[in-house]
Amino acid sequence: MNHKAIYALYPNVRCIDDTAGAMDADGNPVTIDMDAVNAWVDPDAYKFSRALEYPNLSEFADAYYWAQKGDTTLMDSYIEKCDVVKNKYPKPTE
Image 1 (cartoon, rainbow, N blue to C red):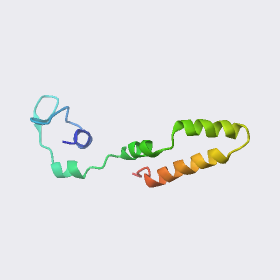
Image 2: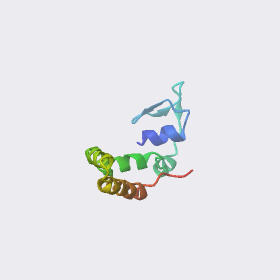
Image 3: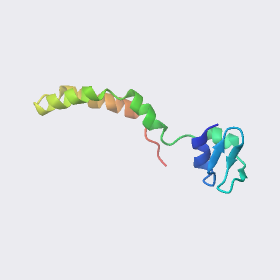
Image 4: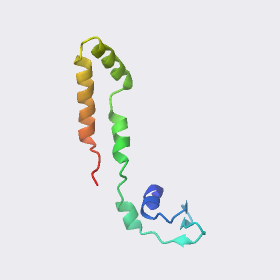
């Protein structure tokens, strides 16, 4: 059961039990449309996908060092790699 989707779609839900279902603040069951839950797209998913594919921060540190010394070759490469990831997983527009 996608708890994050249920909480996003049903703000009155205060508790979810995979066996008993969703309940409001008074412990009353909340009817959930599982088709809507399954169709829900996490608006933050791009952040997690990006984090897995961004170049390593140690690569950034080295690129930054050399950029401060006047050689931006590594920094240009690092930024290009970040741009590829950002284009692959664009930020959703609302």
